[in-house]
Length: 298
Image (cartoon, rainbow, N blue to C red):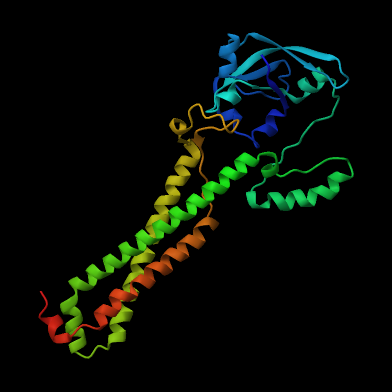
């Protein structure tokens, strides 16, 4: 079977990928386990190999000779990508270097940043430093253009969804304020008959909307943050949507969402301002009530 062999540093790999979360049999590689190998479930089925059995790997070495090594299957992983599970195998970095005669050399070093928006900037800063060594710093969108295009599509869809959500919430707030004004028509009529100016009525309705949105925002964000924290620790299983999906190697249906406070600032402020803005119309309607007719309203 033709496969792609990766030599990795097991300790550092946990901070780069989620491979260690996908094992269905055995365990992930550990430092010093140079005679062990981990493979995908589909490859194990094709080879008819089980946990603990030996697997012989052959690959051309750096000097042109054929490198050969026997490994014991330490673990079997399963992702939602059948192509990945059938073509990727992992051993420790020293084991791959020894088999291929690489010495201490490596073919690539992967960096995972805390913030994805910093990728281009970090690559630009590393480029002049690496050029001296004949190395290249490549941001992930250049290496995985299909994934970058998919993320662009997701952002566009998300923008449309957020816009529709804003419209729905704004209309719901306006409807709520209209109902509140309608239920208090006699109250407004009495207030205006006693000399309350129309602009005071407008302010009262708007202030009540502000308080309503503040309370709703606190409760909503607290519940939302709690849900995100929960699924961030246990994972959100979307395997049903990604079963046998092979367009992106290594794609997994177990999603671990993260709470990013900065992503809430813009939408939160926008939604708050939109809700207050739509309350101006029912507030203006309340300010234009005829006191005598409002008092007789039932």
